Length: 409
Image 1: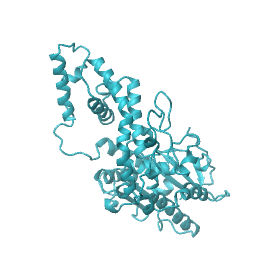
Image 2: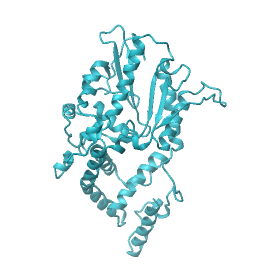
Image 3: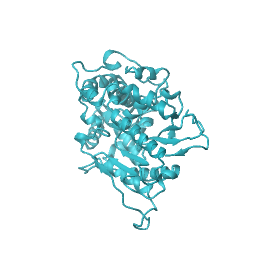
Image 4: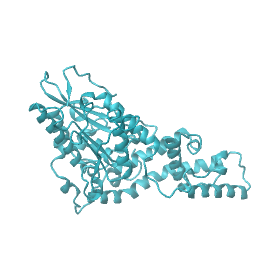
């Protein structure tokens, strides 16, 4: 951002030297400096993020009072985060909301709680991407192809903005201005500066390039992207099996785990969402069961299901909630929510409530033929996505009401 400020001044100076009209240049460009000028460190959770997670914790407690209203114990409500400060800070902000008013600390009656972390080098549940060598190799090989696919969009927008404002923009300028647009809009609530340089069509195309990158490098672009998240899915299922065992044995409340809370990154949330089969279109689910890469998200103005702003926004989350339904043929159900909204599972007849046995059979088992070690061990041939093998341009929530015989576990 500091370099961008210098570049913008140079572009204005160049326009003056060429005696071009400056009338079309937005006023903010002439004096703009980075809001983060002088900062030497970053990556921390900002105040807006703290508030989002705190409010989320309060909403979740209200949504599941039977699970979360009893006295806190670290073995009953386990909280884990990755060994990255903003992830553990997110866990703390969330838990402050979750347990607010339940302790004796300060005016807010907060209470102490435990957040544990594991070394990045061995965190297979939340940072599986760090230790999966086949994924690292795939990503390294695919990144140039992704950039190549994005280039025509940036070149076209570079030409259009140069003509519109009389400044000699380069592709790098447009990339930096798009980055600034997203930071200003999300962190500072400013949409009339960098974002205002682009028209709606250009903004939709730039967003598509981001979505394309996330799809290929983190999502359904290749099965290794999400299959490496198998340890996390297995951990979720195993936690539910323990809860079912506790329920069947009528163990007293407070003697078994009721909530397993995990705080990580988009690189964790996106693969996990893909393992569940979320954000698919048509027959795509049958392809991922066969571990085949999917077609790339359609280019605007065509509509698409895959959008990064929906798949993994700030404070993005997945919740899998186990219910006991004694009056039903299937006694236990998994309710799947993404960003607090029920989402249909293609593997469960597009229902957001899935019988637990069906969930294991159709969601977990298809990915179980290999373990993490086999998935992440480098093979002789690097896996290819649709992107590598092709050149040129490729381009409702229905929540079933459950009856009142459900008891959340």
